[in-house]
Length: 218
Image 1 (tube, rainbow, N blue to C red):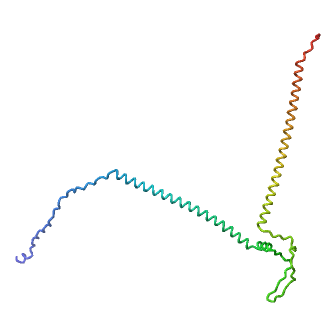
Image 2 (cartoon, rainbow, N blue to C red; image 1 turned 120 degrees about the vertical axis):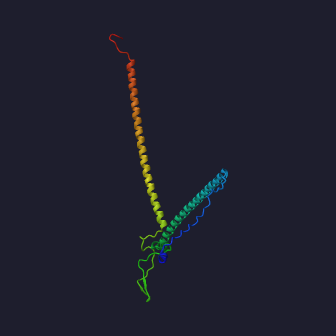
């Protein structure tokens, strides 16, 4: 029995339940009331912001317009300088050309020599017989500056314009003369028709005024 008693199950002791702490009851906390903003200060602030925005827009628009005008002025100046550069480039090319050198030499009194002589270097041998020029060896060659050529072209254009004007005036004068002749002819025809009408009228008046002869009458 003692052995069995040793193996007899012993009743388990009940576990102790944890103590539940009670939470305090929730209570509504009163929120502080916000004081409403007055309408007049709010409207004043809004109007100030709008005024500042309008002033900023006006200033920005003025700055943009001034910059646009300045840009247009600079673009015009750049185009003008570009045209001047192109004109100067053309002038430099003209001054470097052989035709300009020939004209400058002709202006200085130099004339072409159709029979030149050459010196061979380093020997110093002269090839050909040098002859002085008189300026009449090549009369067909003319050396004119571009101003002279331009003046000649302008004179030629003026001559053509004068001839055209003279032809137009002659044609207008001829038409006026023909119109005058036609007017005179029309006037003559009208006078003849008037004379014929007057003569016919007089003849009819005479026939009406003369009595009709009756048989046996005086």
